[in-house]
Length: 251
Image (tube, rainbow, N blue to C red; front, side, top):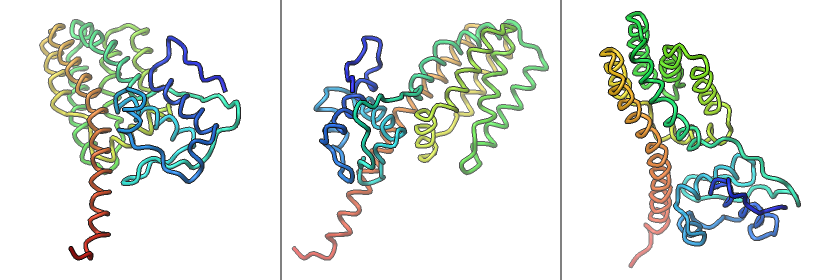
């Protein structure tokens, strides 16, 4: 297996290749538990979010299974010379959206119609309704953002932003992290969408850009927070299980 990272590679992919190579070499046999995130982070001198992205890449390809309370377990080994197939990660999509969507909102502010403002207002209400649904999809959220892109009257902008949402929904890596985010009940923030709507209603391009930047920055941070919260939940479950096992012991 060629494990040489390219200069253009994201760090998590370099790490995933290294871990896959170690699986091939037999460092972690099937059925064994991989080192904890903090151990891997210290060993490779990277942040824990990078470790989590790498583990998600391995999980998507079926090599490991991340179990709440017990970490990552090896369930299959890659074949000799097998080339890892990476999809678009949730972090990559979030970063790209942060580049494009604030400018889309700024342009839309100067062209939006009253009818389109009414459509956006209805979508804000729909986002709130979807947030109250157990395991609800984010259809209204996507519709809100793509409507703003459509309001720019620029088909290239609309196609770019629509494509980013498609990548979010179709990428196995992105879908897996989104599922983990939903599992700890992180959902679109209605107040952020309402602030974007009000800036557009005022036809204020600067305010619309700033409101969209705040929203997408919070969304990107939410991915990291959700990932950290999930790690904390695993630790708490492990400690609770340990307490249960030792509760009958006498000091």
